[in-house]
Length: 136
Image (cartoon, rainbow, N blue to C red; front, side, top):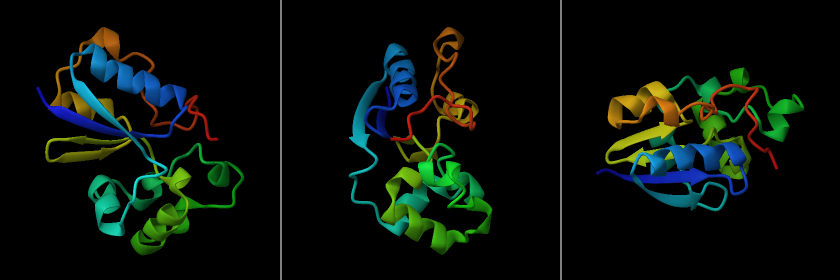
C-alpha cells in the first residue's frame, strides 16, 4: 500500500470527506496542516506545476470570493509568493503519494494512482467553486 500525505485546512468538511475516502479504501493517510506547513516556493511548486497558474488558487478563499485576488492575473512567481504569504489561497488538499504530488482532489488523477471503489468517491471532489469547503 502507498503512504499518502494529505495537507488540509483543519475543519474543512470536504477535506475530511476526501480523507475518509482514502482511509475507507484501506490507505494510511498522514494528515498535515496546510496552513502551518513551512512551505517554500519550490516545495509548493512540486504540487502545482501540472496545473495552469489560475488553478493553483483555492476558489473558496475569502480573498478570491471577495474579488480581491484575480487568479488569472498572476504569474508563477507572484502566485507562489501570494500563497506563501496567505496559505488559504492554496488549492487543497495537497496530496503526496510516493513520488506523485497533486493539488486538489482530482478523482481521475487519484484513480490513476490508487484503486478507489466507485461508491466511496461520491461527493468528495473539491475542485469546483460550489464546493462546501469552509473558507475560514
